Each structure stands twice: as C-alpha cells, then as structure tokens.
Image (cartoon, rainbow, N blue to C red; front, top):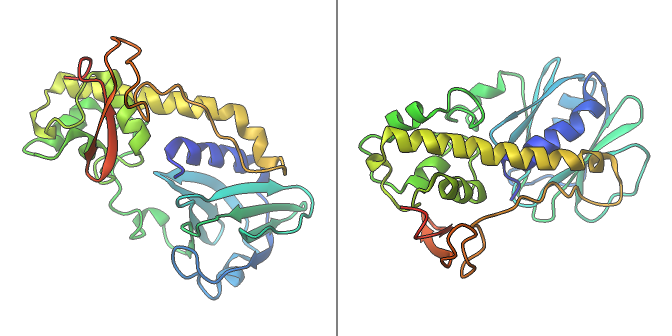
Length: 271
C-alpha cells in the first residue's frame, strides 16, 4: 500500500506538470473505485485550474479554483503523467487531461483507490477532519505524543499508527522508527516516559524524511511512460526481516501480531 513517503513522492512528481493548468478533458472508465464515483465528476472537473497539489496524510489534494479533488491511491494505485497519447491499459481507470497536452492517469489493479470532488475546504471533509498532526510538522513532538499517550493501554506501535494521533505513519515506518528509538512495539503507550517519546518523535521524522529523500531520485519516472514509478529503496533494519540477525547486536529479528499487523523487532535492542 502506498504510504506517506510514496504519496509525497507522487505529489512532488505530478506537481510541476499540472499546477496552473486547466482541465480540458476527463475520461472515467469505471463508475466505482473504492466508492462509487460521482455521476457528474467529469462535469465538476472540466474547466477547473489546478492551483496547488498538497498532501494530507496519505491523501492527495488537487486544489482548484472552484474546489478540490481528493485522491487516495488505496492498496495498489499509482499516478502517471503522459506527455503524448497512449492507449489505456486494463487497469487505467481515469484520465484527467490538461492544457498543453498533459494527461494525468490513474492506474489501480485492485480498485481500492478513491477520487472525489468537494467545493468546501477538504480539511473539514469527513475523510480528513479527524486526522492528527503531520509527522513531519512541529506539532508532532515528543511532548505531544507523551501528552496524548497518558492512561492509554494500547501498544505503542498501534498508538503511533492511529491517524487520529499522528497521520500517515504506516506499518513499515512504525516498525523502523521504534527500532531506531529502542522501544519494544508492544509496550503500553501510557507507560513510556517523556524522554522516550522525544526519541520516538525524532525517529519517526528521520525514517520518513530518509524515505522521501530516496523517493526524490525517481521523480522523473512520473513522466516516463514505460511503467509505474519505482518510488524508493529504504534500507530496512527490522521490517520483513524475521529470523535475520539484527545489524546492531546480531540477535535474531522477531515478529508478532499487534493490532492485526505484522510487527518486527529486536528483543535485545528494543526494551
């Protein structure tokens, strides 16, 4: 599933191609993705000019002069910028065409993506209204996490993955951040000290920034018509490495289920 770094990479990839361009055509090849598409979505988009491409958590916000198109890439969706016409493939579900012969194409094999229009502020939309602070913002600090964690008995990993606490910290990055901070993922959130939450906030930020920076090397792929963007290759220390030796101490990486998600950790390094 595209996580925050992939969505931010997508935002940066498409932004220079579509900002300040007018939407001149819309082709929707399905009437339903994760949710049914508005029957008049094409009419709502035609004639709009993209003023900004923003991200909120894992959502892309294409702000226009008359509203905002909210995009979620779901489990397998991705965007491609086409600079010349190309026949649509089996899973190419939507084309948004712009002045200057630019086309933004949505591909989604599993159809779990979402696309909807709002004339109101998208940040108050029901999909986004309950989101916590962005993990790269100053609002997401160790002090903030410590304050929100008091009297909470849930595992700290589930706590930082709750979008109402911090938006956009996916499973991979939660595992990696907890390893860097030396925190066992199953510890009750309410039992961690302020000092440990300050370390965790720093680790979350570092892991996401490194992934985004790595993704920056593939931005050209968003206008390369050969296939989907490669995004990034992050050097993972624990995620998906059960049974492998820890790169720090040599102990085997272990795994368990927390909140229905696979969790990976080093018992020696994470207390």
